Length: 522
Image (cartoon, rainbow, N blue to C red; front, side, top):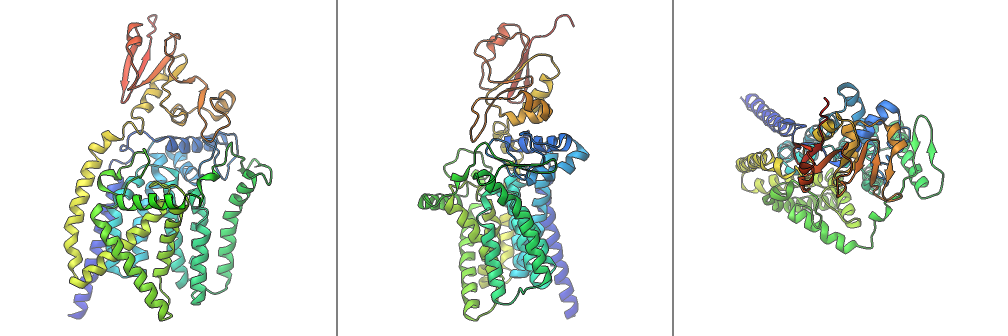
């Protein structure tokens, strides 16, 4: 009878695990590549760089397989682009293809959150953390578009998971080093804190003799050092200590401008206020950038009290175990959380810039929920389940209806179709100045060799380069139509009356209008 009860309990836990995991995967896969429609300019650039590296062996600045992309002039993280390449080789240059790495990493993150919390706290809390992550508005939004820096939370979490596993089996320390090393190629903002995270974890675990000197420890250091070295050389190049390194097999480029001023302690208190606003309001503070979280928050607004309870629980556990001189895995979660806080104190954050903070926050929040519910009844946590599922349903309805319309302008809805159809006509193509040039590179599949030969910049050198023209494309619509052989792509704020008066044919593609004169001889 006792065995039967235990077996039933295990089956129930397993059932909840699969329900929550599949619910989270469904929320990320359903209509993937369709919503959000079209692509963000950073996605476009990452996709075009992958296309260029795959077919020409160089990026848009002419560097062969760079460790950091020059892109806008002030650089772009490279890992996402390299992860796109194998998918692009199989499926071609498509919008959904350039989002696949983020989708895969995000779905794996759901599982890893569960595995970490199961080891650090218990299985009930692990299920709660899995559910919170699965239905989290921020994580769903992040998983469905391919912003390169959004890979950072997943890879940092993978590093933590394999580190915890490495305390049990030494070989996993090498995988931890690999994940932490790769995380450096996801987002430059985390460069200052990842060494602190690794050092903090090592010092704590070595103090309690959970990690000892071994061949696995040495190999882990070699892996991490090998991955960090190219980026260290990148810093030396861009601070002027050594010359640019360029070979046929890899490059360490000199950027047009280095954005080193983003990290500073001089605005500490302003940054702290802004960070608090991001956490409390759960949306971007002081930024005009679109974010899906403005209606439902990062992880729903009524979850915030549980987060603060979780903070209290973690501090309580850490202090108790410190006094007893006991080792506690909670410290490792806390180190990750504090790394996110530190980033928020040294830069003027928005949700993307402090993205490694939110998975530790979800874990801490789940712990707070289960801890406080444990005072009421051991199954009291189930009373919250309908509330969270209802909120999830409302969010999903919003995401696939109103949200789709709200983000059309941000993702330049229709620009892909407009560019592809414009290229079917002969003549110069004039594009609305509202459209960023990487999107035209992406949709036109401009050969990178032709781009490098023809590109003219408006503001070279600059932190964020603006293109005047390349190939057939000119950016900005002239006030008066003088090129009757040209094709014009207008945004929805531009008046098309002059084109109608001149007899142009107008075709609507989402938020854009294509204008051209038909060849009457055809």
